[in-house]
Each structure stands twice: as structure tokens, then as C-alpha cells.
Length: 144
Image (cartoon, rainbow, N blue to C red; front, top):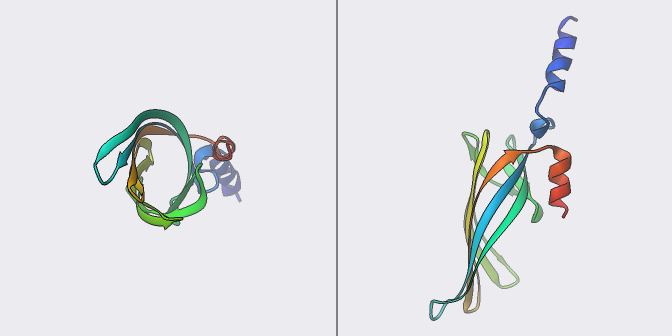
């Protein structure tokens, strides 16, 4: 019986970022988006962007979801890092890329992908850093 207060104290002291077995991250990201005409390799447009992204990671089931996707993605998780390689075709657009997110402890965010349709390709290179956040903040950010 004397372990009940100890268990309660341990539960109450759990980090809010992992309180429900999910890890919530806020990532500050800088990106470069390059639009290319594939047949000539001509750069049509190049833009630098800055944004913040929110991620929910389920390390137990090796999956994550983000602010731009309500769906869970299966990922490879090892040593506190989530890694995803993907190739998708949707509505005639082919997307190929990879993502790398350090979550335990939080740290580097890196993603590169290319989306192609007909003779146009868009290449996105994203780099940033992540920090733990609470569930409420992450879910609010994911819904914006």
C-alpha cells in the first residue's frame, strides 16, 4: 500500500510531452523550395520559407502524424530518432522523399522531398530544430 503514493507522484511528474505515451514536438523549420522544369532542368522559381510544424510521435507503435496530415505514417524508430522514407502517387503527383526527426531528446529536424507532375518538379529541403511541447499546444498547432 505504501507504493500507491509513490506511483501517483511518478505519474504526476511525467513530462507533459509524453504524458499519454505520445511525444509532442514543436519544430522551427527553414525550407528552400525550388521549382524546376524537368525537361530543361531550368529553375523556374526558388523560395526560402520559415515555418513551425507540430508532430505527434507514437514511439511504441512506430508512427507519427503532423500538422499537414491527419493520417498516421509508419516510421522506423531507433535511438530516439524517427525516420521515414516515402513514395506516394496522388492525383497524378508523385512525391518521393525522406524525413529525420530527433525526438528523444528533441533536436534535429530534416526533410527532403520532390513532387513531380508532368514536366514540373518541386524540390523541398527543410532543416530545423524541435523541442518538446504539451498536447494542447501541439494539437492546437496541428489544427491551424
